[in-house]
Length: 112
Length: 512
Image 1: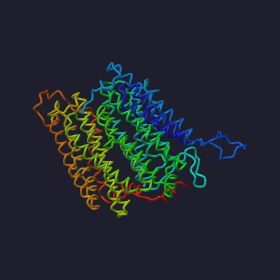
Image 2: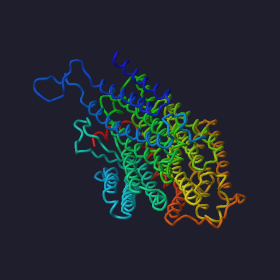
Image 3: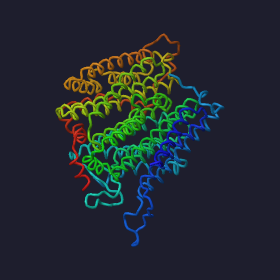
Image 4: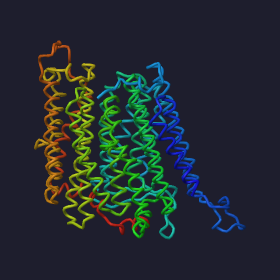
């Protein structure tokens, strides 16, 4: 149970980072924290205490297998997260070139 | 037909791969192949609709059939509701690409533009036809990553800021969606939507399911820009190149947001009164607040973007009322009427909002401004842009011969019959304010001759842009035909039936 609570705290840390920090890079880091906490949650779903790797062999009872599907899901989600982070950081670099600042309060060309 | 289903994802992806490879050697290769692909997909989806069969087709990836009713592979499902969405997506994609042929000559890097466009459409088609929750998440991300890049395509200050905002909020939505998919998997140990629906039917753990439902509403609400989550929409939709604005407003917020909400909450979860109330209330809120935010705008594309929020409110209101009526065991015919109104407004909004964004693009193409105060007197110099935008404005504000009138009428009639008088009144009032807002657009853009500029300087836009606008304007009129009972029974009714069907239907699909 404690692991799930820690996982949720990690989520809240990320949310806090997005909401309070003014540096664009720190916002990206906060977003990463949120996503990582979700990945952690997905891995925890399939976890069994003293479980075994899900490789088909005669020696292990099926009840001992950890669920392999969340692991596959997390790998996919990490790859997708990498793509979104790359896009976000590209945008951060372009914003720095245009505005000469990483401060989100000074990036205000849009109004209304 | 089921052999053709994967083409909806594969063909745009092939195009997206071929364009950067051959595009730099062959001139006009990028436009030609994108247009061809979208035309093929449009014909395929129309063929499904008009083949007379409203059957559902299932495609199992890798040929892994279900064993004893337990699905193994990811499945693609083509049923009337997803067929209906496929028509909207591919029609708008084709017409926007046609418009882009001339419009995008203002920008550099056309190859990248068409590549990203094709990837976006591949993702949208995937979201609509997939029958697997995690696969839906993957296609959703494919769509939004492409649209992040397309919003920032101009790489000026405004575009970059809008895209950054869109990405941060979209990233939070992604986290919420992935989290709720994890919750559902934890509870049901399966990812197939129809398998989940069979398991949830017998479940009793309402607290966990309701928590997951709220997470899903927040996640997909962020993608669909419903009222409390709408902050990114006006920036992103007004900063993108105009054909992309038409795609984002006309298709992406519907297919990636509303379609998924409707599909999951009608077909996967049991319909509950609480969720019906929540969906109806946020629909009404976005309908009312969106239009009040829109009326003070002077930036043309920003005005249109706020109206997108408001018009999406109508769609959610119609479908949400249907959900409310069903959950209170009201008459099924009445619920079907409300949902019909919502879906009818969905296809109408795709057409007329797409057209309005293309009109805004045409004005920007000649005048290089989006500020209504700097336009004026364009009715003489750009007659076709003027007449098509007049049609679209009348459609969006609900003037009779155009399609917007009929869908709003159905929603309002359904609200009155179900005794939601306040909702009906609000729908009428919002429609009137919409009319006022579009009168302002027409007056300042096309009639106001006091603005000093040389009128002779402006000609109407090139032929292909005119062509795609005229086709959309004709569709604005032509879609009114969907009100005729015979046509409605063939096009809208099957889609509504899918939403109203109970779980037995999906158990059949599981074994297909």
